[in-house]
Length: 394
Image 1 (spheres, rainbow, N blue to C red):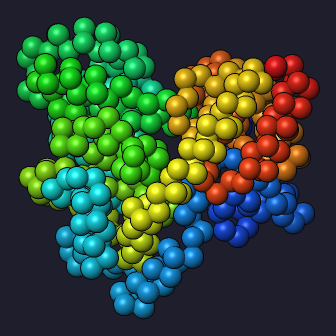
Image 2: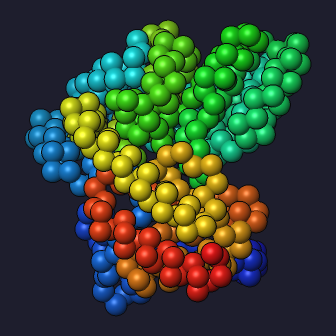
């Protein structure tokens, strides 16, 4: 076994794709302290977090978690169908159902578990699933577990999707599944067009709102609100670990859908319920998103400023329309070197390489937060320009 592992690791290293964990000391915010090779920690500006609204270290989430611990303890003790269904779980599901405009909601422990559980329980080998080629790995794995026929359409290509939809004879159920915000490119699914096609070809629609909750829509309710499609999406999945600054995931939809998942989704049935304090913190996060629109507005002000600056410098930011701003540099070694130089300058941005992104599209994945200050953004642009010129990227 060791020989196999050593050879595989050598191949990964040779291809410039080897990854290592970095340790953050303290809280997640616009600035974070990162341990450096056991020589202590270095404070850097954080431009690679999914903490879009800056809620991960908000004291109100901490207080909500502490109060829940006092009332409900820490662990849930069992799966929710046994005896682990806690008061905070119910409060969060009710809050999310109202927020997403759905009849009911069901919590999952992670986004990965939600996608795998939803898809593999609803679809089987008699069904066909149409999936955007850039969908998250958890969606693909859920489809593979379901054993449904997988048809992947080119990214956001509605003409290609319609051609595939025309040839669906013999399948029992049909569904189009898409991310709403694509996590590595930062662009948005053409959800209005997808819903139109689904109506015409008698398909269900499932949307993964992981990077859209708190980000898209007038009130931060996601791409469904952004496109005015409330009540027209069969399955809404999302996570609480990004803009909500907490942890866990959910599925929102009809009462019958939620009842079905409770009885059939293996990743819900056979796992311990979320710690109730985590659910309580998420309730508080949704309350803040609802009551503090200025936070959402600031996120977009920061996003538009930084994106415009990077594009004006000549960087390739693809078709990003969200706080996720890719800087495509193509070669993995260049992405790693760019990231290293930024870190030395006091900016933390991770290098993203295959297989996370397609070959020849290695990049820096820059993400913006509502809590970034104007001087943070200007400093970042100065360093991106300096290092970009050093590496002959602009």
